[in-house]
Amino acid sequence: MTLQRFVAVVSLAAFSILGPAWAQEKKASVAGVSPSTSAGQAGATIAPRAKTPTGDDAETILDRRADLRLDYTEVRIPVSVTLQQSGKLVTGLEVTNFELFEDKVRQEFTSFTSEDAPLSVGVVFDASGSMGSKLSKSRQAVAQFLRTANPEDEFFLVQFNDRPALSVPFTADTEEIQNHLAFVQSKGATALLDGVYMAMNEMKRAKNPRKAILIISDGGDNSSRYTESEVKSAVREADVQIYAIGIFEPYQGMGGTVEERMGPGLLNELTEQTGGRHFAIQNLGELPDVAEKIGLELRNEYVLGYRPKNDARDGKYRKVEVKLVKVDKLPRLKSRARAGYYAPAQ
Image 1 (tube, helix red, strand yellow):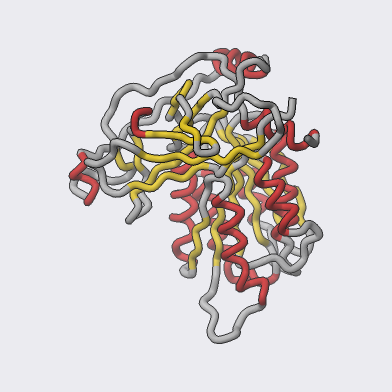
Image 2: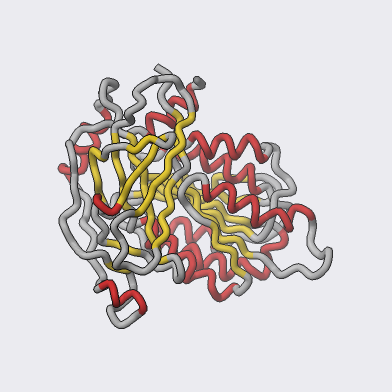
């Protein structure tokens, strides 16, 4: 097992320190949906999220998390739940509403949380030549996403055209990222895969356990040094959720390059295996609202913790499947979680 893979696994497999953290009993609710909407039949309300400790308390918890106990590994899987038809967030579910399987074997939960935990987020921003008329709305989208931030969050910015560049390293100052984007100009080709790879590498410096990447791009890759398989492998090994906003124009006949036609599929593959999702849009006016939706989704996730029944330290990939149960009185729901993780090698 490589050192990179081991670091990624340790990041994913958070170690038990506080014991079970069961959420308080409350009704399921749909964020942003009032009881008068279609979800109202489920008694939907907007449930306030629990806040994470700050100050000395937060530092104490982080210190205890760093004290790794190799005899007790707790895998933690973030899960988002939305209404299947509208995509609106659903909060307020309980641990009894979830089942989790690892390699088709049902697991027992050791922890269940749904608080708005601090995030480490990387923004991967397309500044290639084809983004010219889309830059203004793309900047607005990033600004809207950053408005959902909490004081404990941290962010960095990777922009790319022919080559990627770490424009703003990790910072809690969201204005620093917006100020930099104000001067970005579009030019050159599209090294999307290199931009994602650079972001994954920068994420190793994250201070928060929960990590995410937001990609904003208008097409496929045509200039990267890293291959698609190399980036997909890195994404699969890392404990990072990836969300993407793809800005695509409708093609007529054989219009558009091969790379552009493959762009939506590439973003779908990168996001789905991490438990994130890809929003493909054609109307630039939708960009800010979609970015805000992603920010809210990241802050309204359930985190399922379990001790794997397969305790072999074999470094193999374990497939994970999350199912929703006991939700008959709610509209049809959809859950999203990462597809799996690599077990420790020793």
